[in-house]
Figure 1: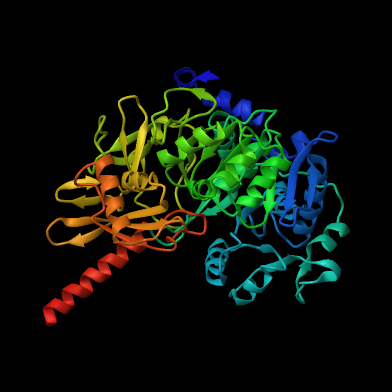
Figure 2: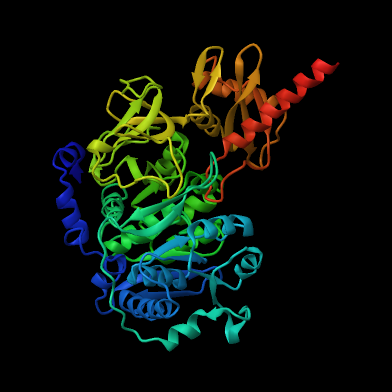
Amino acid sequence: MRDYLTAMSDFDYQRAVSHSLHGDLTALNACVECCDRHALPGRIALFWEGRDASSASYTFTELQTHAARFANFLLAQGVKRGDTVAGLLPRNVELLVVVLASWRIGAVYQPLFTAFGPKAIEHRLNSSGAALVVTDAANRPKLDDVNDCPTIVTVSGPKGQGLVRGDYSFWAELERYPAVCEPVMLSGEDPFLLMFTSGTTGPAKPLLVPLKAIVAFQAYTRDAVDLRAQDAFWNLADPGWAYGIYFGITGPLSMGHPITLYDGPFTVESTCRVIKKYAITNLTGSPTAYRLLIAAGDAFSSKVKGQLRAVSSAGEPLNPEVIRWFAEHLDVTIHDHYGQTEIGMVLCNHHGLGHPVHLGAAGFASPGHRIVVLDEHHQELPVGQPGILAVDRSQSPMCWFGGYQGFPTKAFVGNYYLSGDTVELNPDGSISFVGRSDDVITTSGYRVGPFDVESALIEHPAVIEAAVVGKPDPERTELVKAFVVLSPHYLGDAQLAETLRLHVRQRLAAHAYPREIEFVSELPKTPSGKLQRFILRNQEIAKAEQAANARATA
């Protein structure tokens, strides 16, 4: 394991480029980096598992052949360098073929999450101006309701099942084209992915990811995830989102490492099956997934204990209780990592770099990044004062984000990129997550981070998930209110609510406990699993306004 401080002080961007891309940034192709370079006889690129326990494996050579054929099809349709190709596909081999084929001809791949409805798809396709979209029979009906939908290619069932008149058949077209297609070489500044923000705090905005970002993706996979040659790797995230396409596909494949795709719904049974069947040793996913696994208790831990070497978490802050549970029940260390669609993973508890791990902290700046905490005047803050997490772009050569495509942004102030997340610098140099800047609660003059309260609630065995927001209050400005999802073994009554209030008060502070607790069956989340506190907060604001209006008219 490398020392973190040494890695930071010795960091050299050009050396990182040479190490990751085997050359400079003037002649690049993502298909070459993620496939061709590793196409040795018999070298496996993909282990695929179906929901019915069917399975298959594909070599880099097979993917190279399929990608070349589909690339020639794209060229025949007039798709050219810089055009966008969208994929509305489940986690199957066809997804990888479309991604690699798009990159091969210098096109830009646009992922579409399969849980999106027609309007969400329409917004993204119309915004991107995609030349072509590839989907499967299950998702094809959604495109009927998309205005100005581009050319459609469908992965159809046997005998063309699911193929709509006018669509191209994916596998039928593949067979018609030759298996040789010269890759189009680009520069590191040229885009290869078109992403959209999750829309958690506003409309989803498009951003282009340049080829040079592969350097950062690979560095994260190596340093934070600690992916080793002997590991069997599985990223639970869907490739329709940033963490899945950045670090479930691009990062490991660019290292020549095989990936695992499971085409089915997330369940405890399927997770155990894949981990055991493929001898997974290195796992990455979201806190939401991990909390659901923990809720299964022995039904999960007894099947996978001793199997995993390293586990990583991203997407939402990792509660300390999850960290303790994985250590106690699975004998494995799970580390929290922080990032965004715009900047990748920039703050991590690195599995592959030696540094102190502060329980509950998001970690330390990734090599090649300088992360700071700013006040409302954009001045850097010292230890112990909450402020906005920012990337100092002038001293962060690995930071590749340049803005949103066609949209203005207030995220850039001088040399800083403002994340919109409230954090706090710790004495050991790590940074702790407090919440989205608009999630922080002001109660009786105190600022309360919802994450701390949620983490304390989850420590109680009755609680599976929790969301904490500020409820408008005339006396305290806001009071702390918690929405709690209970284990099926507990009854949500007034007595349990009081027990949970005291539980949090004893662990945090007298002003930080939830004065109100509402038991709910589920919490609002984005399709990628991120908690949407603002929905709950807006509900409470609306209730307060209705109550005020009722009093005024009484």
